[in-house]
Length: 105
Image (cartoon, rainbow, N blue to C red; front, side, top):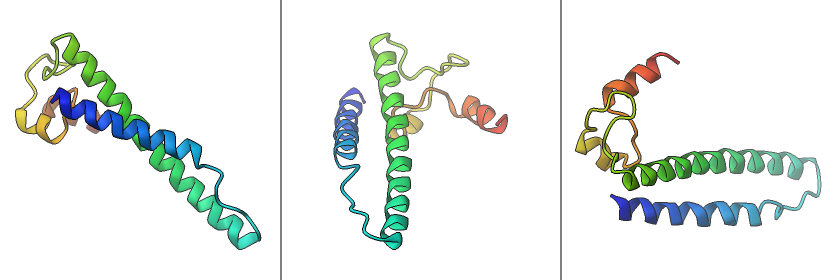
């Protein structure tokens, strides 16, 4: 799991760095270009935010690995199902606690 998390973290770092470097590449020539540029910028920001959130989750999972707490729910302390960790290796909660969090929103 740690190796997979480290690989994904590297990919996200590259994506985020490239997004920042290429943020002003589209040239605006008229109002149509301006609308397109605004849409593209909005999409980039949304994708970048998702990448940042995933990056932060990976960092937290790596910290739990270092503390020997990986695979334990941060709320109830029970083991997180292996199937859940395989699908989402940065999961911090067991499925029951995660569902409770989502229902309370």
